[in-house]
Every structure is written in structure tokens, then in C-alpha cells.
Length: 113
Image (cartoon, rainbow, N blue to C red):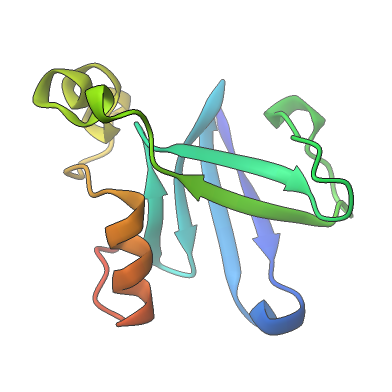
């Protein structure tokens, strides 16, 4: 259980990404805006190789990219969200699909934590 705090580079310079995890990545914030949450997938990969980085392999100085991807539709049903959504992991947030969160960040109207 923990969180990774990332500093943006290139076009993201000056922004921060926080990824909270509990064995798996659960929720990602860009600055104070939620940009991805379970049950959608949040994956951290090495910037140059594209190789996935597990939570235990994260360390200072890595150049990474955080990817948010839609999960299988069955996880987006009420039953799926109850089993693997943000409230299941203790977050007081209703599930919002990653594609809606990313669109909202572009329009600056996302839920914050």
C-alpha cells in the first residue's frame, strides 16, 4: 500500500501525477484531478522501452509514462464496480470511466480528491 509521486517532463513539466496503489494501481491524479481509477487499468511503463513497472520496481529517477485504459465492460456493470471499483478500496468516489475523466481534464471539470 502506498503512492508514487511523479514529476512531469517535456509537455507535462510543472505538473504532478500521483498514483495510489495497494498491490495494484488504484487511482491516478494529475495535480488534484482524478484521471483514472479502478476497475479501469492504470499501468506505469518505462518511457523508452515500454516495459511495465510493477509497484515494487518503482524507484527515484525512472523515466515513466502512466497509461489509463478502459477495463472489460463486465467490470463496468454495477456488480463489477461493487467488486473492484474505488469504493471497494476505501475511496469515497463513484466510478467514472477513464475516457470521461481524461475528456474532463481537457475541459477542466474533473472530480478531485
